[in-house]
Length: 485
Image 1: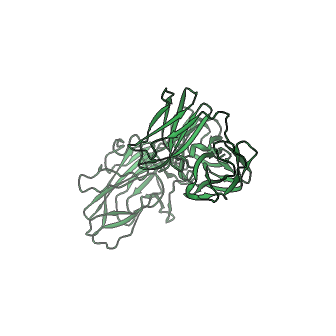
Image 2: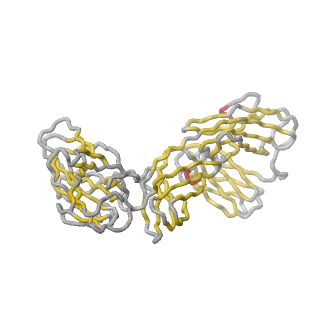
């Protein structure tokens, strides 16, 4: 059997003192068939193994600080390939396109960075980490303490049959190698992965094109996460023969509540022709909102007041608000919320128009009405120029001919975590009340059957503050601010 390469789980020591030494006790190979605690062992401690397929395998190595001072060291979350014949080393990556014989890989059973529990040692344990991605984190091991680090790896198509490989704890010390060999008839195919993909937003959709390593799939599942730990499914994508695939997912799928902004992690789960899943590595994306407001105007021809918004560009814009006030002078403190304008999502140098008919401004002749459009970029409030219109007649402006429908929130301020409201004159059978923050984040939602009293109470389930109560029903939308005490 050929013995040509040496791999090391390299740890870069960054200690202030070196009284004594950091030592490795032993290693143990385990199967990738359970979580950090339940995965079965592939061999006894200190015993090498042989693999005959391309499935992921996990290696746990224990370290003990036998010195008198704390060690601060960086476990490099990759393996180092050492070729003794050429006296060279290559740090293995988690790149699916690598030409190295092994690669750091993800696992459906464990999560990168999750703490390890005591499996090799029996006392004085300090949690280590599970490693499924290439990065560097600082770890400190106190004197007399032990820890365990577990790597998840898999062979690539460049692995050689009938070859002995070695994994060593610390290159700077004479630790016993964890040996692994490949059979002469290693079978199967390398675990699948998404080799490359590109995403382009347009309107309210994101178009995705991706290339897979294998060429026959039943389907794919695209998942997202805000913390790279808890993932939820965004879309299921049909598979088929070949390696080139594309999908179209709604831009709303990236929403974290009521905003597109922030960090998101995405990953694919690839299902082969036999529906066997492979969880691919996640990739981080940063979404930033940007709005180029082209114009904001108001007009009136004797009916409702038209509020028109035109944007030139919108990048991951979720929504904005229209506020209104009355009086001879603009007073920001007197503005009241009247409508939410939901965005198209993503446009680039493509004018997009929105129109709101304000039929609730019932004012006497000669009254000034002021409007402003508000949105957020990077958590910072942005405002349009103030637009003012002088009402020229003693008339009401309503979107419907009926003036019998009335909406009141009381008491306001509300207490005891409940918001009560009246919707008088409503002829529908059901209505929905939604409580949101001032930024549109939904806090509670409830559907009511219409009753004879025309009075309803929504449980707020939130802390004191100012919120928006939105009412929707058959041909009716109403909103009002409510203060919870």
